Length: 226
Figure (spheres, rainbow, N blue to C red):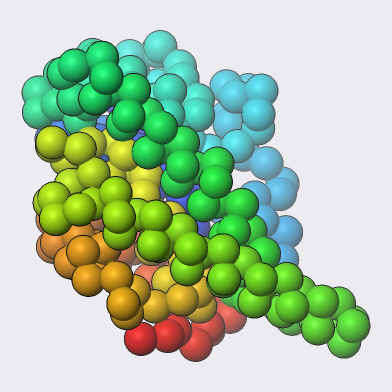
């Protein structure tokens, strides 16, 4: 039995949910409580016990416990190889890992300055001005990332030869950029088509719908562009 500790607005836990559903794996999901004021505090006791990073996602596969979305998704692809979410050749697998890293570590840095938008506004006016100034700089960085991704796609349906963990990670980064009021995909037709295509797949569509519902319940509304 697979158990996943997830969070309603956890980009990284939702990556694992998509991978599990793309592979058709049954799992029990434990949704860890979250709010925009204190986040995941107090921490879920089982998450604390299982993950020294004290955060979701955490996955247990018949008692074998893993944390970190990248480690989890690579394990799932090796333990449950059909359908594959990693390419076959060493070169393609390395490129897939780099694309996932681009989403998780490079694009994510530009998402962080936008995250204040979904929480209660700071009572400090100067802080609000500074936050939004940082967000505008981050939006410029995201627009540059979109251009990098546009060039990487180069007319392909996916970032590699098949739908992969890289597509999952990049999809979640673009989804969060959009939900946080980041730049639209206008002017990036290949990226926009890829994003729209993935949103039609059931595993991705369920995450999109659940994140939107979580935002309706938990977040301050954000004006979206495009």
